[in-house]
Length: 201
Ligand SMILES: Nc1ncnc2c1ncn2[C@@H]1O[C@H](COP(=O)(O)OP(=O)(O)O)[C@@H](O)[C@H]1O
Ligand SMILES: Nc1ccn([C@@H]2O[C@H](COP(=O)(O)O)[C@@H](O)[C@H]2O)c(=O)n1
Image (cartoon, rainbow, N blue to C red; front, side, top):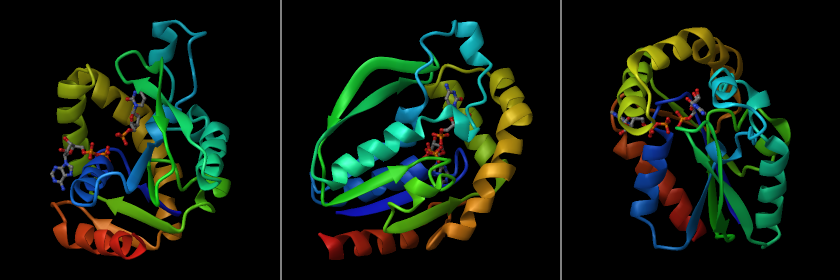
């Protein structure tokens, strides 16, 4: 199994890059694990308490479960990936049965910040987009897809997202094998990643 980690700040285009790769490769050969599925279970908190969580700090992620799942997949076993709701700020209680594939892509803002998980990746990719570009994309996406308003996005950006990005995400470029500049759609870089995956397949 080839495991590819794709990191980068919110709105840099990780999900879009992954979907582009998936759309053009043989169905069923590549699997995806999203770090978002591994936000800690916060069912013991009220909605008002959950809203205040710093979702850009590594402690908000259940890295132990993510590591356990990646090790199981490497062993050839299926895992139950939790489903996360950005509207409820919590896991939904559902899971997606995820079977091991020849190539597994793990994507998320903080996946390179955790040494044990980083060491499981055969290829580490960092997707870069400038912070103003990422904020514009995040505003549009979170308002249309994640049930937020302009005030929520901007307040979270100023209070937690920006400082956490500078502390925990941007420095992870150091560990990347490939950095994809993604201020514009970067079809050349995505084609290169697809070629690497195709060779493995
Ligand atoms: N290169 C790009 N140029 C313009 N918009 C983009 C680009 N990549 C992604 N987007 C858009 O930006 C938003 C965030 O992209 P997404 O892939 O969800 O980012 P991430 O997974 O890194 O948070 C989406 O609405 C997506 O359509
Ligand atoms: N309940 C939550 C959980 C996370 N976030 C934000 O999601 C971002 C990471 O996801 P991307 O798809 O943008 O990479 C992260 O910046 C968190 O602030 C949230 O808003 N609500």
